[in-house]
Length: 203
Image 1 (tube, rainbow, N blue to C red):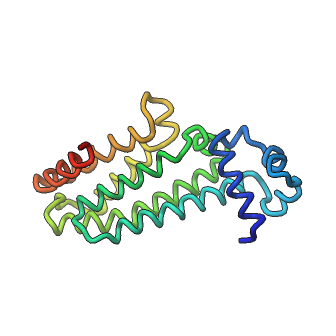
Image 2: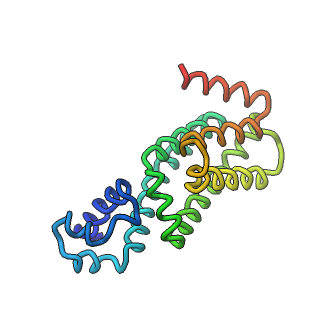
Image 3: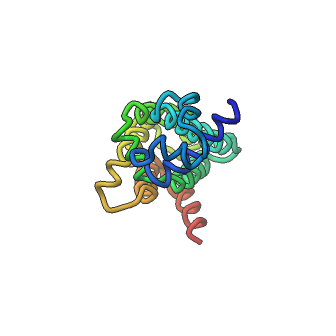
């Protein structure tokens, strides 16, 4: 990627997160970067294409963080716990209003974001659930059904529309959903491990 395009992506990402996708215009971006609008459109055909590039970049960077956790040698409960802690730290970086703007005004971009995060969750959850079943931490029910329930729940609850229509934050929605889901698939052995990890974080 050329340096000019890189600078536009980095600057626009900050603007969209601060002011929202809808309110931030290409004119504003060009003016504040001290470049012509022609320069912006030489690299991106539309605002939607620009925000798509930003979203893909954001997801790619954070997918690497999750991949690093998946590679850690530890039991499945601890691995899942660490992954959701990582996801929580990612969620804290996100401006809910900006994400809702994309959901509302650029639905095709939102669909791409949702498809990418769903694919990522599917790739790491399947392996961890199977690991937890082998270790005796997770109940021995159909893995595909467990993973599908996890993904469907996270997509529905950790969602800008759902969160904005209820009285809690995105991080609260994430934590509540994860705890309910994890406790639902754990054996007594798994619950003991989970509570031990949870208490360590609280302390």
